[in-house]
Image 1 (tube, rainbow, N blue to C red):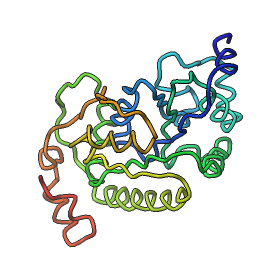
Image 2: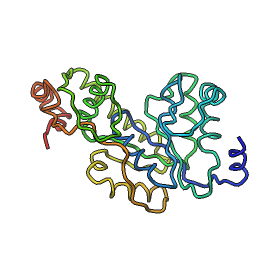
Image 3: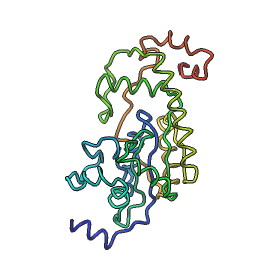
Image 4: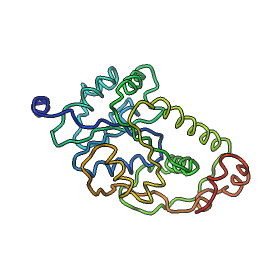
Length: 258
């Protein structure tokens, strides 16, 4: 408490505020680990994912009942007073992850108008070019209950059977979300970050992100790793069947092996 009071008196709130916007399995944990490797950045987790616990995903953040009640009853105050609070003067950027479908129940919905009204908040819109990879990654995570790879271990799982209708619905829903939220946040400083580009050249992409957030440029290293290095045809039991079903559709490019 004394430390927070001291920060309120001597700290600063002139840092860049930002959100990492997107959906699950698009590399947001990879991005977050890179951002948090910068000594002047604080990036929190999916605060509005779980009402039962506060998913700060950050060592040292308060988890007491008072903070939890604030999360449940006044999400705007939580963000304005606890996330975007005063920080040590050397802090240059503070943000958190939020997905399209987070904070949709009545108790939390107020956070979206708040974020939209704060047009100084920078938006990193995280996307994945191949939504089939996103869908596969989520299905595999659900089956294995392994959502983040922090140790660099190679995947040991077997191939996954995917349903055509579920794939199609996920492809269409994801693209619709991306377009809707690009429109909603059109007035904000916004940058699009594609997972495939970040994975292929994280040093170059993170220089672009650091410039966007007005950070002193620093080399950063990831704290998470890809969970699968297998090809799509090795990872999906019915890959060739799905490839035939999606041939000639807007989604056929997802089945191109590289």
